[in-house]
Image 1 (tube, one colour):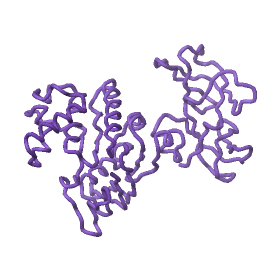
Image 2 (cartoon, helix red, strand yellow):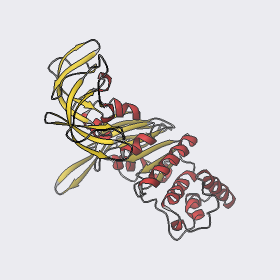
Image 3 (cartoon, helix red, strand yellow):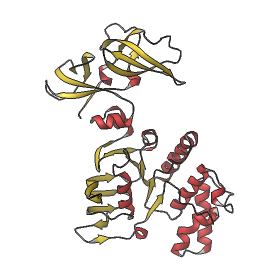
Image 4 (cartoon, rainbow, N blue to C red):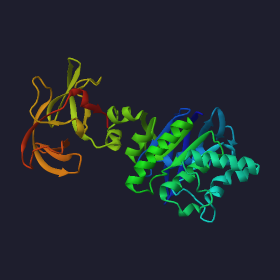
Length: 360
């Protein structure tokens, strides 16, 4: 079910000043896809999620869920949270410690007054879906963190919501369990074919889970697209930097020829992916560490650059190397069996297709 947001605004007053938590946000969440709101703390992503679910009241704008207007300042519409047909999974899971797993999951149906037989059947199916059969009578808080996350998911799913919303649900898990649960969650949501809105500040989580990512900053959506589009073809410096580790070098467009754009920067004259900006335009050259190839360049290679290895750190699957071109640092990733040492003079290449020009 599609969610359409138009001109959504939410302001707070704090210490005598106005904080724009949401600044006239326009957004369309496609039906039956996993849509992630990604951004740093305080960017407005959780406020936007809470406005959708009805836990927060906007100052202006409109929210539609599946074509139905659930909130509109201009029309005076404010559909209560419980009538919006949404499921919600919170960061803390909101598991009731005095209830069993069954009663935690059954609670939304009990509030709706459904028949006992129907509740039993729906809870059984929800727990089977999240692979928690046989734990119905256990205290929910006696389960592991990953299992509690599944209980929260089952409770959100049992009422058969039109949309399910997640507010950083994996942030309390350790790194290994977070990775395992992330894979399970992606599988569950893909099998359901349900619209999901997911809030996180973790870029790996966003890349691994999402069909579409919207990157937020200061109450606005800066950019959105598929994980691949956001990672490889970001249009803004902030997005390129936030979504992953990136080398960002100020550059000035020199000219265009042979299907590339040439820029002048601290690395010299670099051939980049074609960009429409005219000569003299100041942009930022973005190069991901994985696309810097250290070693003897192939014949005819573009962008052959001399550097020195300033530092090396072994992190298991790769060496993380800081290269220096003059005073300009660049992060590169070297093979774990690479035979280099700090202080070595090296030569590296970068394909023009992986030299992306972005705006500030």
